[in-house]
Image (tube, rainbow, N blue to C red; front, side, top):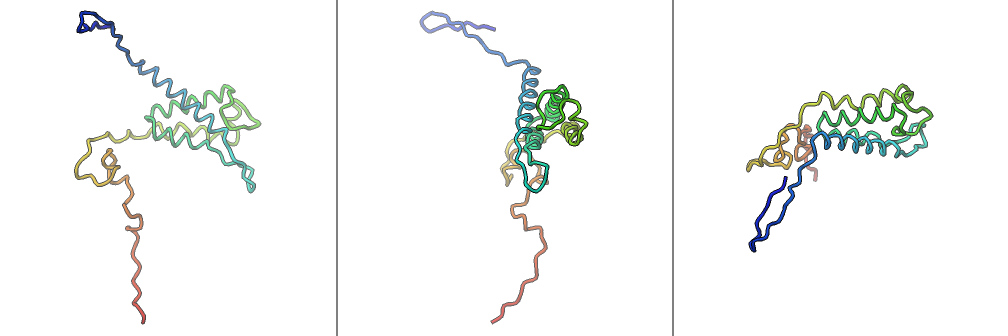
Amino acid sequence: MNRELSHPQGLSHEVAVQARPAPWLRAAGIVVLGSAFAAVCAHVSVPLFFTPVPLSLAPLPVLLLGLLLTPRQAAATFAAYLAEGALGLPVFAPSPLSGLAHLFGPTGGYLLAYPVPNVDSPPPPSPRPPAASSSSPAERFGWPRSHTLPSNPFSRLPSLPSCPETH
């Protein structure tokens, strides 16, 4: 869409108004980047001397993308991640198994559970304008008081009886 603007000296300039990409294109890009992030994190692991199971960053994208994306986008991201792995792309943690066999191997159930928590999640609370009476930053961004920690985590613990002072 072009508009002509008149210059004070009588010259006209064409100004191109740039449109945003289509919503489906943006969503597809988020899904592809999210599944790539999950694939990179799956390959980062630290072997532990006391167990044959290494410490992996594979749960990080599940938690992080589950918090940052909408439930539908996060579920689509991990469904794409599983589909990439089922097709044989090296997106899962290194293992003797590959492709569809990896999904039916020892860690297959764990992998198949990646998209599940995001499917039935309730929508995040809608943001509301900051209220003057809000006391915490979480409340100012729309989180209800029940989702925040008390200012002193020990305030809900029962108190111990005080000991009398001895001289």
